[in-house]
Amino acid sequence: NENVLPVVAASRLGKGRIVAFSHGGYLADKPEGDWQRLILNAVEWAGAGRRDNKGVARRVLTYNTPELLKVLKMSVHPTTSVNEKTWPKQLETCDVLCIDTGCEDKPELAEAVSKFVQAGGGLVTAGTGWGWAQGNPDKRLTEDYLGNRVLMPAGLLVSDIMPGGKDEHYIVRRPPPKLANAWDALAYLENPQPKAKKKKNPVKPTKDDTTQATYTLEVALRALPLDEPILWPKVRQLV
Image (tube, rainbow, N blue to C red):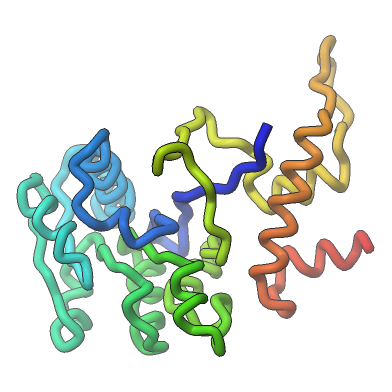
């Protein structure tokens, strides 16, 4: 009954799609388990904003992810590595950008990536929030971290929490825990037992559900800036 937080999440922004991992190691070569399958699935899904046919190769750019480049070059997806000087123009001709956002801190890069996704591009990204925070004690994750400047408009946020796992692995839950989503957690705390529509046996809230929802919302509010326009105003209405 331990509280949980997502270590990977997906969302949409404009016409594009985003898959975000909470540690830079996810974009490095991990031969054990189904890591390669996970990454290739992420690339295919993220690229569907421009090429929605399942199985169609995605044109991929990698930035600051040398290990990932090796894996993608062995796949069906044509992949090119770009650097600071070459990536702006090449964004226009690719379907998916794979980038470790913990390696850069440039507003112009965040702006270019955001426009790329909103226009239909796919983004597969990773970044270690707690590591970045330790290395930048005078900065804030929500305001200065490149990844969050791109992710927050899509409803995602990298926090400074270091989630625990078992033997360096995480359990995959199907479906993902609903109350690990901050908006769903807030809705639950506001109304733990909504009126059921013609249900003979409505699901009753449990102490574990309340604890999970409280934890999720606490982590989100601690990470969000006070002027965040969606979640914070709703919380203030309830206080």
